[in-house]
Length: 103
Image (cartoon, rainbow, N blue to C red):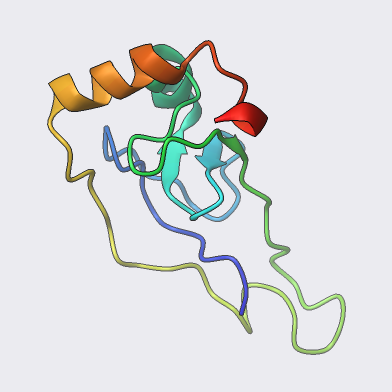
C-alpha cells in the first residue's frame, strides 16, 4: 500500500496537488499546508498529536514499471478537520514545545 496523496489542506482547504512542495503529512497521512502547520498548528497534528514532515512528491512518469502517478494517482476525496478550533489550539499549545519523538 502506498502513501495517499490527499488533495487539500484539512484546515484551510487550499489545493495540494501531487507536486505541491508545501504539503505536510503526519504518520497517519493527515495532510495540511505548510502555512497552517507553521502558523496555526505549530507542528502538532490536530488529529493525532504527532509532528509533520514534507509530503514526498510522486513522480509523474513511470521511471520503473508500475510506478508514477499514472499507475498510482493522487486521491480525490477532500477532507476537513473534525475538531473545533479551540480544541486544536489547546492541543497545539500543550504539545508545541515537546519534540515529536517525545510526544
